[in-house]
Amino acid sequence: MKSLLKLLCLSVFITQFSCGDSKKTEGVSYGKSTADNVPASERVDLKNKGVGPITSVDLPLVVDNELAKTGEEIYGKLCIACHLADEKFIGPPPKDILKRRTPEWVMNMILNPEKMVKEDPLAKDLLKEYNGSPMVSQNVTKDEARALLEYFRTL
Image (spheres, rainbow, N blue to C red):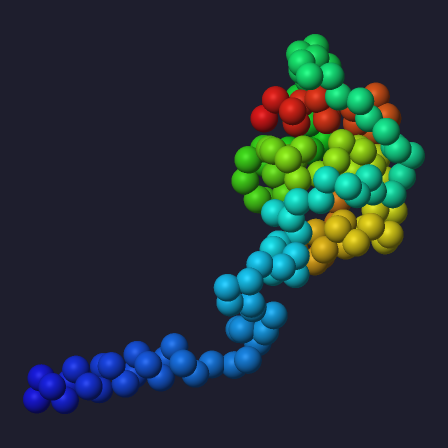
């Protein structure tokens, strides 16, 4: 009787995990890592500068603490409703963003998210990943975007 019960449990287990609809494994690559398998929020692209007015940003080695403090204040007023500093929420977290994106891309996304989502492939992928929740333009200035970028460096 115990053997029959074990056999029945084993067969149910095997059936449960071997059967299923093909959507679950669609696009899955076992043993391989491609950009298609990495969520946009985790994808590293340090060449793309995005679409917008920012074509070059020079970041000093040392963080400008005054500028970062200004950026933190702006972040608290405009960004915190959708972006938690270090975890996914409505939008991606800014922590370590400069390990995955160029400073120009980040500032262009802040300054003109609508254009980025229409024209930048990575921004389009982020929109899909975050269930079509677009980043709302907060009408920040270039100086405010630069302050936000400096704050992101401190996270």
